[in-house]
Structure formats: structure tokens, C-alpha cells
Image 1: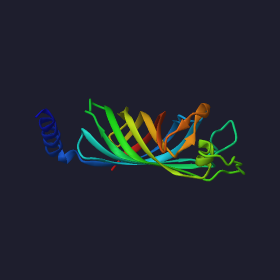
Image 2: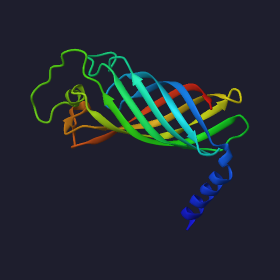
Image 3: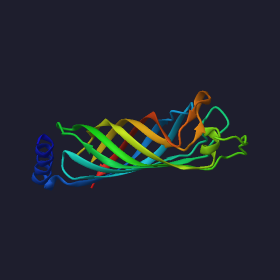
Image 4: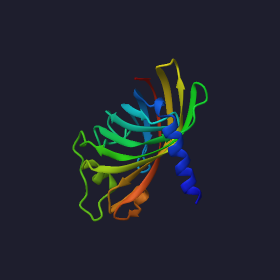
Length: 197
């Protein structure tokens, strides 16, 4: 019974504040970690948001990671593209809006920039599967803070746990045999600015 009351309350709040609907466009810088590889992946991207009300936002986020990864060893990938689609929920207190967020999407790994030799064993090392350029499912759970700089501009910071579905079977870190597909967790941070229209 309580979930129904909660859903009804969210719908009522959304309908009563329908005139607060708006669209936002923003750019951001991203810093992402991978659970199975050392190093931090840096990228730049954009986000479009539809604010259904002052409480709820629907995000479409696209980030490009242009550099080789991992940065301090033989590169598995020359670039990556990440798309995340989800929602934020949180009240506004004056110019500040703290929020919780959830999103789902993909991480497309680009081809390795150099020749990447792999040994022919089964299952192969995870690095060999990543060097082949897979598209991995991605999920993100976290929160953030949006601060209105003016009536039409804002800055926003997000902190989340990004989960990637790695291909398998493979040998992962420490030569541990991983199942057909497995999930890894890593920290993802974004900081950006945008405007409302």
C-alpha cells in the first residue's frame, strides 16, 4: 500500500507543478574508474535534461573519453563513448537542488590504438576481450548537487557508482576466472555547467 501512496504523491506533485517544466542543456567533464583496470578515464560530454517538475528531471547524457586507456600501460582502447539515460529526483531549496539519480545505458569501447597480442587460451584474458572493442551495458546510481548561478544558468556536480557488464568468460584481475558475464563497480564523477530554456 505504501508504494502506491508514494507513486500517487509523485504524480500529484508533478501535475501541480507542470508549469515548472523546462529543458536544460549542459556540458561536463567526467572522471571514471574501471573495477578491472588501474587508472582513471577522463572525458568530456553533454547532457540534455527535461525537468518534468521542480522535483523530477529526466537526463540523456553522452560522454566521450578521447585518450588511451589504461593511461599508464599498454592501451586497450583508443577512445570510448558512454551514453546514460535516467532520472533525478530531489527538492529545490532556493538556488540549490540536491538529488538522487539512477541511469542505464552503454559504454562503447573503441579499437586498441596499437597492435595488441593475445595468447590463445580459453578463457582469454579480459584485456583481450576489451581490446576487441565491445559495447558493455552500464548502470549508474548516485546523487549530486545543482546550484543556480542565475535564473537561466547553473552548475552541477554528480557522484555515482558506475557498474559495467564485462564480457566473459575470461581471466580477470589476479588471474581469477570470471563467469560468462560479470559486473564491476567504479566511481564516476562529473562536473559541468549549463543553461535552461
